[in-house]
Length: 100
Length: 476
Ligand SMILES: Cc1cc2nc3c(=O)[nH]c(=O)nc-3n(C[C@H](O)[C@H](O)[C@H](O)COP(=O)(O)OP(=O)(O)OC[C@H]3O[C@@H](n4cnc5c(N)ncnc54)[C@H](O)[C@@H]3O)c2cc1C
Ligand code: FES
Image (cartoon, rainbow over all chains, first blue to last red; front, top):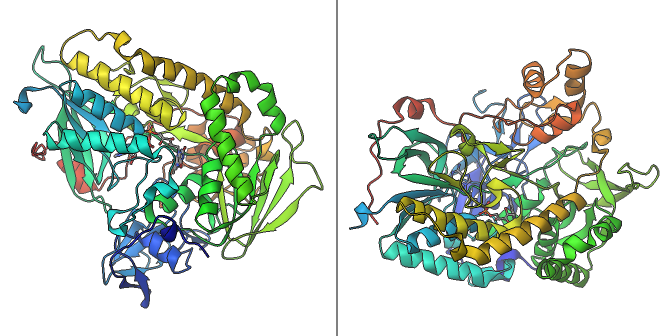
């Protein structure tokens, strides 16, 4: 399959590793949390406070707050805005992110 | 001496803010351009993150030449010390400041730094220009909260900004001109676009043919997109709408159905299309929070602006989609006018509108064109009939259609504020930005200005210290 990176002829620096709930996934320099998760085939990383339903990206620009995620123990970060650094620990967020 | 020049703060580095910055700086004004993103460009010229090192970002763009010109002019002014560009600055409030008698108005722009938005920064300026653009409106339907359902603009933003797509097979649906670049963008990036579902019927275009044909460049642009879609074998279903998104934990398929001329779903026309991505949008809404806290008058959902793009608050200009939705070319024209007007007035002179007559003509033409387009792309008249009682309407607080209807029918709510108090719809993280139009439609209460005190969630510590932080050094 043709990829957007091929289309834009992107040559990012070497990939690095971050973890999602302890599982290693690859990320590229410049990628947001959402972009790295999408690239890994993951579309949801949070469950809602009420019905515990899965959520991921919706607006993609920081307006809707659907994509909230815990990054390095800080809950409620917007995955569509936050860029990743090597070694970052992402955790799927349950409820308010302060439930445990 | 740059420090003796008047100082304009431009908020938003999209087409409108960029055009305004360049125009004001070329007319002798110092400009601080403040934007939440890491790169200038706004929604239309959204750039891939620099670290992705895209050599051909224009492959995802239209109008690249205009962007290059703007970007180069911005760089020239930054190098000359006339403009500073503060990226990663999320503005949560703009405040009118008391100044010495006769000194004219003064403003403090309060921002939070970086994607985590913890640390505060303040910019003081003699005048402000709001170019904060808009965001997408999506009306609810069963299944729209499933992962894999994204806004059309969101799919576009992820594609342009991060060079990623959410899946392999997409349906692009809703109504409005944004659906065309989104469908062609996804298709060019290798996504199988199973269908473009537009609720407007071809007849609606015929009815407005005259107004639309007055803008041949725009019609040609639409035709180019249509040809590209044909090239990618994307099926176009006009006069259709999505009635349901299916899936257990993520999107697996959508059901689309035909609309009758009254905008009702025709029974028995539903068909199921398997897909893992639904990019959906029903038009755009302007960002007006900053204008509202400054006390600027609104015209319906839009910030009111006069011929010079001045709001009714002295010292505050507004340009681009914050004053009404109309695309990048209109935002450029308005930004240019606003920047020129602000420069003249900050120098204490009466501006001569003849000097920007061409931009004025463009603005007049494009506003007429978008008014016609808007009429064509109204959401289906009976969209609320698709919202079942158990459809989630407020995504943040998980309030259903049934609860909202009950607030009106059983509890007697007669305005949006009461509906919000009774149901919590609009009280969550996004402060009703997403569910606002849906709640208004379901209750028949009509949208009112939302009056959010802050444009962004603000840590309490920052609020407590606001006004005590040092003004950011002008250090170009
Ligand atoms: C997600 C999305 C994608 C879009 N993609 C396309 C497209 O591909 N093609 C197309 O023709 N049209 C697209 N549009 C329509 C687009 O809005 C206009 O064509 C055009 O970009 C409007 O220009 P503007 O300068 O008015 O606003 P924008 O381009 O929206 O620029 C506004 C800028 O203000 C900044 N901003 C807003 N609020 C704040 C704040 N509080 N603090 C700091 N900064 C702030 C934003 O970061 C942004 O950079 C898209 C719209 C959206 C919402
Ligand atoms: S997807 Fe809407 S805030 Fe991130």
